[in-house]
Each structure stands twice: as C-alpha cells, then as structure tokens.
Figure: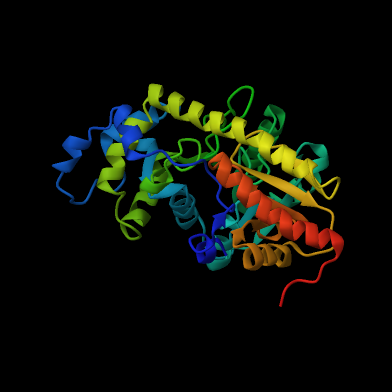
Length: 368
C-alpha cells in the first residue's frame, strides 16, 4: 500500500523516519563532496568497505570487521539473515505489532510462523504465555524490533533478559532489529541486545535514527560464520552497497556525528509530538494516543466500528492523505501516523485525516 501511494498522495503520513538530512548538511559534518566528484563509480566492496566496517564495529563492544556485513538498508539486512538461516520447515517467531517484513519472508521460504502479542495494557511487554508457546526448540529464528515499530515501546531490561534466556534454552537465533535505537524522546538510550548472548544477531541502519534513508545503508552484526553466509547471499542479491553511500555512512557513523544526528532526530520528534497530542485531544474521546517512547510514528486508537483498512482508504481517496491501517502492523482498531516531518506539513496532514474521522464519528456516508 505504501509503495503504491506514498509518492502519489498530497500528504504522506505513512512514513516512519524524520525529515531527511541533506547532502549539504552532511558536508558540514565532514563529507568531502569535492573529492566525491572525482570518485570512479565502480563496484564497492560487496560486504562494505573495511573503513566503514571498522567504524561500525566500534559501536558494538567486542565486534570486529568480521562481525559486520553492510547492506542496502536494514530491510536487506533482515532479509539476508532469514535467507542464511531458514530452510523449509524451520519455524519462525515474531512479536505483534511489528514491522511485518519478517511475517512475509518465512511464508516465501516455507517456514511456519508463530506470533506473540505485545500487550498495550502492560506497557507493551510480551504476553509471556504466548511467547513461550511461540518460541520452542523447533524455532530457528525469533524476530523483534526494539524500540518497537509501530508502538514506539522499549522492552524493559528484565524482558530482554527473559527473551535471550528463552532463545538460549531453545537454540533459537534472536534477530533484534534496532534501527530505531537513538530515537528516544526522553531518558536513556535503548540498550542493545548485542553482546547479551552468542544467539543474538542485530540489524540497524541509517534510515531512522540517523535521518538518512536515501543512501540505503544498513548492517548486520553477528557471528562471523553467519556474516560470511550472509555475504554470499548478498553477492547474488544486490552484489554491494552503493559506493557513494558507503562514503556517506563513514561520515555519519563516527561517534561525534552519530550523537549530532541522534540529537537532531530527538529535537524534531520532541517539537512535533505536542502537535499530535493536541490533535488527538481535539476529538473529545474518539481517539486515544499511545505515547511513543521512541520512533517517528505513533499509534492512534479510534473508537469507531470501521475496519482500519477501510478507514485509511477513505482518507486516501477523499483527502489524498496516506496513513497506515493498524491491520497492516497486526493491530486492528488503530492508525499508525507519522509525526517526523515539518510542523506545517504535519498540521495539514492531520487536518485532512480529521475531516474523515469527524465524518465517521457522525456516521456520515462516504462519498461515491
């Protein structure tokens, strides 16, 4: 749905990162544009250049360049891990709600999928009974996102320990998608799963917390044997990351620039979240805002007997505005709304969504 309509509608509130950094801004952080103009545009190193992998390894204690595979975005990182690990009949577990990529991939690889819910009434901690039924000795791979897409929730330290211990008991590989680490609105930075167990593999990238989605740089951090297999898969999938993107990433992931970009992201989110709060409050009980702890999108629950897909289609058709139906992330009765853009863009997009919500609350018949 997003790929079909996001570049067609007047207002896209289906996004999930902050407004992107420009090339000019990156030059102020040390990107040498003049030198890049003379760069021969050949193939780059297919698993990421050594300078980039060295800088990424420095983020993850105990990692070396052999623990790192650079990919075309975090989505490719997740995909490569699944390709490397799964055979027909292997079981996969994942939390719901979630980024649904790892819901689809197991189906294509003939790997049965089991899910467990994160419970909003319990601060988005897992339903542990469902979790233990989903993660068994037959489970080859467990996928979760932390901070979570779309709830913006962050697992507690005790929950993280419980997840890791279960994976060690069952021999399951834990794939922790940490692309939103660094987008926390308040408080301490989210703890990485990296280093908690040899069973852990982490993926991340520049798209969300860094605000640089257009260069399509992601990475896998994992055991060297798995990384080597992912590298082989990568060679036959997209061959290598973009050569210019590798240069940009080397600048972005240095310690100083990483902190600057994380702070930029937090500043955007802190400024925009009150706009979303006020908009939700203006509906007098029709809507409930799930306050995100991290991330550039928020779940908004609506109290109306309309399926979320139908509601979002009305918003798209009648107001040329795109939002994500809760059904697409495993949580019916919600809308996932982006709040990481420019304030004036967000205000107008929300106004348009509100037109349809007001009609729904009055029982208005959709336009023909």
